[in-house]
View 1 (tube, rainbow over the protein chains, first blue to last red):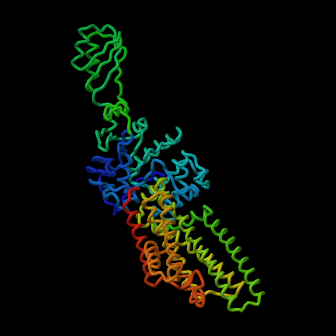
View 2: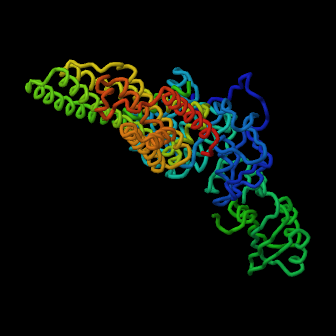
View 3: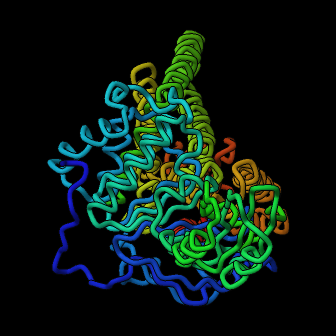
Length: 319
Length: 276
């Protein structure tokens, strides 16, 4: 498909497994430390969520990766090249949090200017621009001036310009801001399509639900430091709460559950167990059945990204 | 390549925003007013049996007055059109969509510069051409050293543009406008102080005027242009406000050119280093 072509590796492109690598990246504005020491690895083809409260240093970090802001200290490479390298930006797509551009341009003209800035040939632009307008649902508005666009339409045209150059790395800063449910679905589909074509995506979003369904890995950042990095498929692993509904469960059997469960909270026929891992649940089930317990329900409660976020970052609001 | 894209966008922005069109319409109105005034002056003076030499000099003075007004309008228009281009795009975030493309900061700034230079070149050419064309048609007079004079007016506008771009890398739109027009105001007043000092033989007053020209040499470019274009008789007699009582030296014109280039170099350097 035209808008979703796999990445073709050009021979001159420096090959590295990482789309982004940073080591102790630091940014100080006057006396205020915006980013303390960011160390991060994002692999090629990975969808990476960048999470943190307001003022955590996410946007400043993104700006440093894009060469908009110079780091005070530390190192960073993007697609194997030092940040600030102008040529590598041919391979990067970026959607700023509040996408703005010359609003006297029409949608098609806006993409044409961006295509020319990317150094795309006229033939490439003729091929890509209608396809991307179609992808973001703005084909009918291609001759409309951007100044007449709604916030959602602006965000859609911003997405189109970020994908125009078939990038190897897409950086999306709050991409669903201002979008209706249809637009949010579009962003999710676009992100998945980027994964399929082998591009890496750095997603900066407050909407944890979206990050949860799209990202392979997330990093929790606070005060400009990565507190923790987790694979999303490992989110279910680790300490798990289990909802249990059972009859004929006497005190002796209940105390026997201590072998697996660190805490058992009874509430009539309902119990809540906390086990170190969901892996022990078959054993727990066998134990209960062997002791003639009438088992009606045994449901592991998946920990949401929001729970994890609050656990790692804390509940105090951002700045 | 990137610089040309930015030059095209900058030029088209002025055209699409109808800025250039409005400036040209105002220019047409201005030239119409000038022409009407000159027409009446020529007709009335020539009907009064005044010696031809006197009427010619009066007509030349009228044309110089028109050119001076063009110079002031072109300077103000240059500052107004370019004052928002960097600070405005930085504050709105538009610059983020541009500066993350494979185009260097230098190319962005030089591209914008080229776009504005193209615009002000057309404007200066049309306005100076309009005044001179109408002046010649109505009075038969063509000021001397035309091209040199027009080039000096053009350089003055480019200097203002460069200074606006330089301040635009550091200050908000409003502060930038106040700074550039304030500096030009110093130059403007300094020029008249120098002129008055020369006529009244007050060396310290002349020095004060020269110091103001060193701080901001824009007005000295106009004064040199006026000196080059005006009638040698009027200049020698010190009876015109543009007399050569204290003409900016060639060294001062060279200084203005170096000032103009350096300000652009500093603008490029500063824009290249600042956080966006």
